[in-house]
Length: 438
Image (cartoon, rainbow, N blue to C red; front, side, top):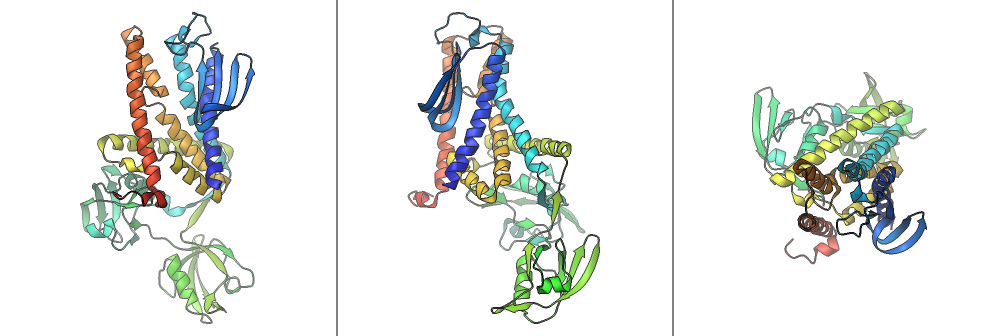
């Protein structure tokens, strides 16, 4: 149920904001709006105010604004308040405002999210020097080693771990070139990232060197008595560099024994002795750990807005690269997500809290805004493209020509819908069992 309610919340806001953009632009230039609907199909709730009927319809997978004289085959009187009576520039403003409102929503919501402050992994902004190589991974198969500096991925320079992850993620099971550098020089490797998760994200199987960080210390427990503080980064235990899981295993295995922890606190290192207390049959010191070091972002409102612009710019680049990858076969169409996938993501985000759900809302809103601008008939971008072509040719296309273009767009959209719904169904385990070809 959480997924359903979260999905309706996310889709409801996205559709409302998108259609509100069309509605406000139409009203501003004097176009009579006949219907403002959230959803399609039978109308469940409705009321009329002025010339407009406002309604909520049964199928919550979109919405629409119906304007007077909107289509060439509508009954027209030639009145000034009809959509096709307006100039191409005025019609363009109405069409563009839907996607524009989704982009604006993405920026505003992410500003709100960032303004709340957040903890983010420190390694994301660090140089991509390999600290771990997963056994049996794509990286191990081609000889990437600990200490290698990743320089380029798929012909793109990478400066941070975040750059690496974003470059690899869309390319599951697709051979790419990875350039790495170490003391012996640079070498170019052909790597096929493994597919991970039900969303088939590409993964090289490498990661940064991660140090466990103290998230909480229980008063009166061994860690507190030893002087361990929240925020300390554990660099060594008894001289060994261990991951979070390995550190926990070492502590659990040595109740009653004094262990030397080397921690980094700010810019200084401290050696502390802690003796795990026997709890049941294992040793515990009374802390909770983050598997990696985090940094806290607490921007002011203006800085949060600037960070939001930067984040949405980066996401836009990723969206465009993914779209291009779909056409060049670099990106698998299996990564496309439909309504069921959005519902699953929304439910997971809702369980993590409002901030996570709003972050997802921002990302999907940006996707919706950009995808609606694609020059595909039926979408806003398709109508804008037709307007532009008519402007260049200095004549309006015939009704028959427009109908053919819309038919092509409808077919393309239906093929896309079939693809994303199929992808969604394959991510549901009990349904996938009925697909013997999977």
